[in-house]
Amino acid sequence: MRNNGLQIVEVEKDLGVKISSDLKCSQQCMYAYTKANRVMGMIRRTISYKEPRIMLSLYKTPVRPHVEYCSSVWNPYYSKDKELLEKVQHRYTKMIINMQDKAYEERLRCLGLWTLEERRNRQDLIEVFKMFRGFSKVSLQELFMLDVNSKGTRGHSCKLVKTRCPRDYQVLFFK
Image 1 (spheres, rainbow, N blue to C red):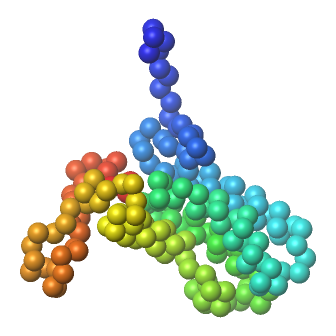
Image 2 (image 1 turned 90 degrees about the vertical axis):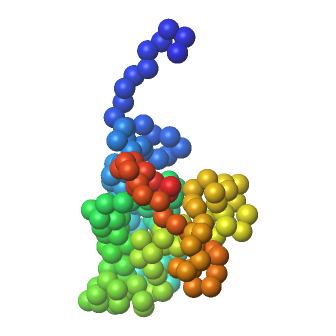
């Protein structure tokens, strides 16, 4: 550009999201995990009475946003990245009084929380619904195709067809 060479970089951070040259989100997952752990450590050191109501507010406000920020852009595809992010909520729920001896799923049920993967899936479904109803600036036809085969739709015409992804980078993103 204007006789200036462009540098080749492995990772670029844009709007707080790290994107690697191979378009994988592992470094963003590690970045979000590290930031959330720092905040979680500060809460552990400063809060002495870890009552569930207080700890849930402290989790939802300063901790969880770090692992969910722009997750529709970098939604983890690999199980190692999903597990890494889930560790944050797993460790945090163990800090709460009377939750240390319970299994993770039982702690989530008692506290009224969903797993982070369930929350990301819900966000994606809400976004698709908005596209389908015309509430989004992105049109449904840009990302999905409607099924024209009426036999497989069980009486309605709203079935979306999942297209094959010939390249890895298409699997790693919303499209």
